[in-house]
Amino acid sequence: MLRQRTIKTLVRTTGVGLHSGHRVTLCMRPAPPDTGVVFRRIDLDPPIDIRASAERVTDTRMASTLTAGDDEAAGRIKVATVEHLMSAVAGLGVDNLFIDVTAEEIPILDGSAGSFVYLLQSAGIVEQAAPKRFIRVKRPVEVRDGDKWARLEPHFGFRLTFSIDFGHPAIDATAQRVEVDFASTSFVREVARARTFGFMQDVEFLRAHGLARGGSMGNAIVMDEYRVLNDEGLRSRDEFVKHKILDAIGDLYLVGRPLLAAYVAHKSGHALNNQLLRALLADESAWEVVSFSERTLAPRRYALDWALAS
Image (spheres, helix red, strand yellow):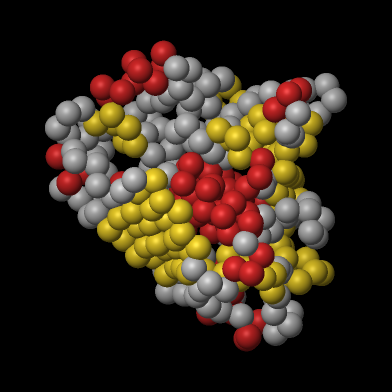
């Protein structure tokens, strides 16, 4: 049987929120089978749980933000910028996890998923006595917004294809399209270290709207009108588009289970990714929940020993 997974022991870190600028301590703890990923605001009295769910995404300005509920009071309780951590959780195949935070935003750390991967691997990952359940896409689902679009298609595994078009000299000089098939590609080695990026000319506007207050060249790729300003440059020639893949993995994992699907997108972002999940869930004929009684029956990514696959 292909089993669910959690971490062996708790692990914690401290950092600042990219948009809030608030200092926050984050602690990840093991969770029982069928828990899913649950954020807990332990700075509140009593603490409030916020389940990672496509339906709980209420703000997608520059990040994916979850709220505790639909009523006015619960709607004010949120946890923001969850996508990098969710990407690491998805990339390492963790199904069940408690995430305690002391503020309303997940720490940005180095601007990628790499630090979260390190923390999860340090805690250790263990299998649980329950079948791993997937959402298998049965027919294509697509959403569009002008020239931006995102689509999920049937695929026995998990593959993502993303293209970008920013019209900026520093980005134009890099790879603009990437396909990542996790049957043959390592999330940890090929995707996890791609950092978020932004433009110096946008900083004042963002900060005036309560965003990017914790941003710096230590946690983002920063560009002026012509070039990358970070002294160390890019980590890879396709780092910009790879980060869009990283974000999409985190956004898509908010569906609550790993997907068996191919994701194809052009210029998509957090808002369109969430609309895609909602469109999928709204059409019950387009998906089903499946598990695998034998590991060898699963897609190659999951049939392999996970320590080697990741």
